[in-house]
Structure formats: structure tokens, C-alpha cells
Amino acid sequence: MLSSIKSRIIIFYMIVLFVALSALGLLLYFSLSSIVYNSIDSSLLSRAKALATLVSEDNKETEFNFSEEIMWEYSSPKARIFFQIRRPDGTTIEKSASLGNSELSFLTGENQTRYETVFLDGVPSRLINYHALEDIDGKDILTGRDHRIIIQCAEDIRNRINVLKTYKIVLFLAILAVMLISASGGFLIARKALAPVKEISRTVSAISESNLSQRISVEAVPEELRMLASSFNHTFDSLERSFNRQKQFTADASHELRTPLAVIMSQSEVILRKNRSSQEYKDALAAVMDAAKIMSDMVRKLLHLARLTTDKLELNISRINIDEIIHESVRLLTSLADQKGVSITVSIPGKFIIPGDRAALLELFVNIIDNAIKYNVPSGKIDISVKKENDFTITRIKDTGIGIPEKDLGKVFDRFYRVDNSRSKEIRSSGLGLSICDEIVRLHGGRIEIKSRARTGTSVSVYLMGN
Ligand SMILES: Nc1ncnc2c1ncn2[C@@H]1O[C@H](COP(=O)(O)OP(=O)(O)OP(=O)(O)O)[C@@H](O)[C@H]1O
Ligand SMILES: [Mg+2]
Image (cartoon, rainbow, N blue to C red):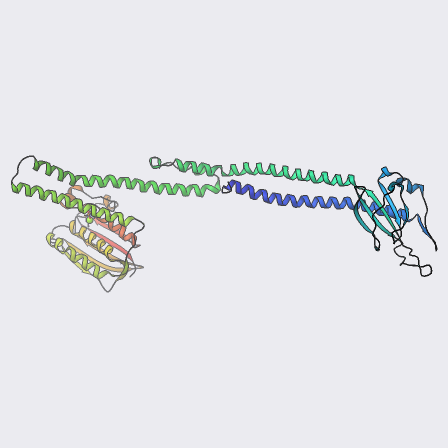
């Protein structure tokens, strides 16, 4: 339960509220209690002072002069007001009738006015020990008698204590009520604030493989959550794109593999229908092998492409000499170029060293030069040159081939895309070479630019970081 944001907000909110209200409650309670006690104490002091006026002193005796006016209050036990006048040794000079047989508690040896709360016959009472004649400093030198008197005056404070108790209960109940109201308010606010999050998660869970085009409506969510909603939408956009690409890719791959498979099946079927001459068997097997080679080449490229596009692929980066890698690519393709009578010229001024994966870069240049040979005219030419530009080393492979029509230029990097099926038919081609090149260059932080004119030639520029 504590893991939910809602309960965390409410609990935090309740703790803060409880601490604040309790502090306020305690402050109010103590202020009120001090006001109450101060008023009792000042009334007791006035009473004690009034009683002090009734005490008279001569050299021999301390006398208490009864005054009806003052005394009537203390006469009945019901009045719950008491006094007792003592000498410092505790002996009583006079006490009120309301005390009956009881005595007010007294400590000898004190010489300062003091207030205390005591229990008189089990009833809470406030008591003042008022030191009258305090300014007379002790004993009479002649008589040796102590002149000081202590006027004790007490009052039943049951009612006041009850008021304070009631106040305490009311305060406690008020805090409880405020907390309950706040908790339910907090709960409602938290629920309302979090409702859009629920709505977002409902939409997100509704989006499935078959329903990838659904999106969270950004306008419908509060401003604070719009960024979250649009991030979700962006993620779904790219998920949908990659899912569609994947679907397209699977469809294309199956389609591409179907042609050589159909060749293998039809050749085998036809040849098995009746007995054939050994030449016929040889021809059929050669056709089957050709189709199998096409399939194997395609599968190899597909696997390679899949490996290049996984995020886990790690390049084996080392210092690559462009000169060396271009010459190696040309060497691998010499026999193909010779067959077609295509001449290749390499002009590399100086040394170009870039960081890269040797095997991947070899594959990159072999694929591009392979295209330049395959789509060249008989006795055509290929010029390979290298130059530096800003942070890049640019390798340009320029051919005098059939070129690529402008409308197809943007698509040649798509998987299985071939400009013209009729012209690709006699050339063994799977339409995967440039997709692989694009991935390799992307992994090296570079790019490929193609310029071409139909029937004139093509120029492929490979930008690689470093020089
Ligand atoms: N230098 C070029 N001149 C003319 N057309 C080209 C050239 N390079 C590529 N193309 C066109 O672009 C298409 C895609 O090239 P890509 O290298 O990806 O595939 P491919 O050469 O058909 O097959 P693969 O390289 O897999 O054997 C080619 O089919 C071709 O039509
Ligand atoms: Mg190619």
C-alpha cells in the first residue's frame, strides 16, 4: 500500500498536518492554562493581601482582627475558599471556618511567596503561601520573637481544571476531525491528480501488436504529464515503424527466397517425371545449384544484415589504412572486372588512416566497387579517389555505368530494392548490398552520398570519421 504515490502523498501530508496541528494545539492549551492559573493566582494574592490587612502586630502579640466584610466568604465549607494564617514555625494564628478540621499543607523554612496546586480532601485546589511582613528581617532583638507571618489562602479549582480538560478534549477532537477531513480531501485530490496517469497506463496497455497505431491524446492530459504522454507516443511511433519495417522485411525476404526455391522445385519435378539423359541431369543439377547459390548468398547477407542491426554488435576497431583496404577490395574483384572488361584506377594522394573495423570496411568497399563493376557498361571505367574534408575522409567510387534514375536514388538503400528488375535479372543481385553498406557506415559514424545520372554513370562518396 505504501508503494502507491497516492498513499505516500496522503501519509506525508497527514504527518505534516498532525505535527503542525499538535504544535498549535499544545501552544493553545498551555497559553490557556497559563492564563487560567495566572488569574487564579492573582485572585489568591489579592485575597492574601486583604487578609494581611487584618493582621496587626504589637511588641508582644500578633493579632488577627476579624472583619465581617472579608470573613463571610470563608465562613461556609461550601464556599470552597480557605485561609490559614501561620507563624514561620507552622503554628496557626487563625484559620477559616470553611477548613473545618482540615489544615492547609505547610512547609517550614520557606521565606518566599509560593503558589502550588494541592489536594484538599481529594479536591484539586490552588494554594498561595504569602509571606506578609516580608520586609521585616526576622527576629526581634529584644523579645527574640519572629515577626513574620505566612498567609495561606486556597481555592477549589475543580471547575477550572474541568474547563481545561474539556478544552483538551475539544482540541483533540478538532485535530482529529481536521485530519479526517484533510485525509479524505487529500485522497480525492490525489485521485484526481493521478487519474490522467491511470488513463495513460490504460491506453498504453491497450496498445498491442495488432493495435500499434493507437496513441495517447496529448491534449487531454494535464500540462505536467504532456511530456510523458508525448514520449510514450514517440516510442510507439518508432516501435510501429520498426515493427512495420520488420513485417515488410519478412515479407520481402520470403518473397525473394521463393524464386530460387521455385526454380529448385520445378527443376527437380520436371527431371523426375521420367528417365533423363545424363546431360539433362547435369543441366538440371546445375540450375538447382545456381538457385541454391543465390539462396545461400541471400541468406548469408540477411544474417549479416541482422547482425549489423543488433545493438549488441561490437566493432573491432583498429587503425585502418584506406589505401590498403581499397587495394585489397580491388584485388578481390579483379577477375569480375576483367570478365566485364572494366578498368579500375585508384588515386590516393598521401596516407589516410581512420579508426574502423577492417572486415566491415572491406565488405563496404567490395560491395560498392562490386556495384560499380556490375552496373557498368562493357569496357567501362571506375575511378577511385580519396580526399580529406573537415573531420572526414571521403572515398569516391565513380563509374561510367548505366546510372540510377533520379526517382530511384532515394530507395537504393532499402532492403531488396533493385532499380530495374529486368536489368538485375541477368546480373545476380539481391538488393541487399547497399543496405549492408549503409549499416556499416552508420556504425562508423559516417554516411554515404550517391550522385548518379541514368546512362552516364554513378558516383558514390563514402564519408568516414577521421583522417
Ligand atoms: N553503381 C551503380 N550503378 C548503377 N546502379 C546501381 C549502382 N549501385 C547500385 N545500383 C542500383 O541500386 C540497386 C541496389 O544496390 P545493392 O548493392 O543494394 O543491391 P544489388 O547490387 O542489387 O544486390 P547485392 O549487392 O546484394 O548483390 C541495384 O540493384 C542497382 O539497380
Ligand atoms: Mg550490390
